Image (tube, rainbow, N blue to C red; front, side, top):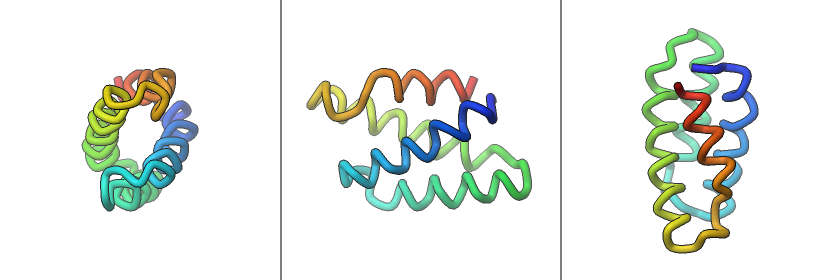
Length: 81
């Protein structure tokens, strides 16, 4: 997990989820997990929620290729590996 990249991509992902109004409460859950991770350094929640976000972004991209940038999805995937 690359924390430096996540510091940039997590807020972008949260904003995109909110802008597109997809994922229900996933934006809030990811935000909570990210802040929790910054406090306790336990990445389990961040990884789990980020993977959910990636799958939702991929679904949105299948419906509309302009909805979510390919770059954002790739950055999220790279930062988790």
